[in-house]
Length: 524
Figure 1 (cartoon, rainbow, N blue to C red):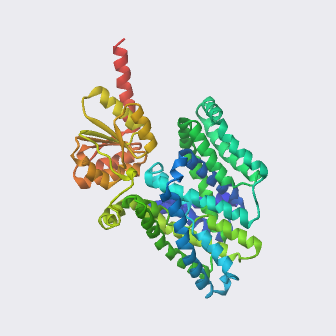
Figure 2: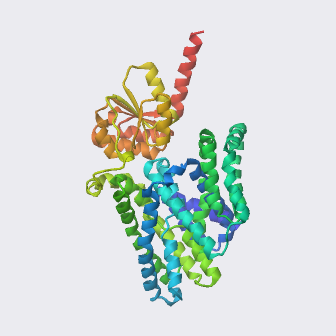
């Protein structure tokens, strides 16, 4: 049997075991990588194509959801730059200090220490977006801020790599700037593709093709994949969303290769473990810095807290910088393993904390809110729900259909709530009464007096988010007025055990469809 297949089987077993004790499977994949490396099952090189394809698809799917205007606010690029200015000198001092105790990790010059500190100032795009996906928060305001900061970091990474490798874009790379002029033609092409596997294939071709073309022109392939996603989103929003949804499973599967690959950078020695542990302790400062900066720019404590916690990791970019330094002879290969372990430890620290992020905020909400500015940004002000007695939380396909059905059948005063500004804007143009709000935000519940409403329909994109809303309603004593969508029988059972009404999407939708068909038949 191929060693790489055994490594994947090991990842499956490790992921299953880790999940059974209440942690995300990706932590199992990280452990499986170190175990597979120790057992000499495959190599980092054999996983490289899988890992690279996963990262490119990840960046492409980010682009499909990204709006360029989300990068322009000062609280995005300003926070990214000020954070680096604060973190890099401190990390440099720590690296110089700890390396002096271990000859194996000795550093020849301060310039090398500054390079490592620069690499460690970045946060992991892969883990942050995966966490957003699992929570159903990709389109939330705080996630857009975090992704914007990550994109700014990626742009700085491109500049650094270009200068350090003396690899500048080809003169023909300027022609890439002409591609957006053809977005209407691209939109027509997307609509002509239709649905199914051909649309899935088109997403893979656009992502990997854009990266390959960029590499040929000496431009960073990852940024090209991101830009390709943005271009498709501006060409046809609906088809871009469809491609995004189809690519999610494939992207997550390929990213297992990335998490496995981390362990193949070598089994760490005791000095490497100690240094990686010290570097991991520095991560305590990262969410504090992000929280301080974002609240200073006028964002709410909750937004600042969620964004800061999602960025409390070390980036895969650190490994790239270290590999470049090893190639140039300025850094020992031991540092690549050390940084791989530091990144792995940062994932182990950040993932469980982010799994309980909403619970932790509710627990420490009062002290955190003391740091809010009196004057918040306009987009951070919670909108009123008016005198509506029925509220639909989540205005995706299910929520929108439920809203329309209630409007047709009842005389109830109705309002829809969604956390995506783009969705709210489009729905208002279509005549929907809806406001922007985060269903998992306790501030929103309190200030909107949701617990006093007659009926609350919950149709968020993720079961964990639906569950968080149900727990909040239970705490506020209005769980019996909650009707929540479930996509699987075990989800339905979980929700009903909390005391809310659960709507099993596939079974109950089929029943509604049958009733509708009978009514139509009786009219003819």
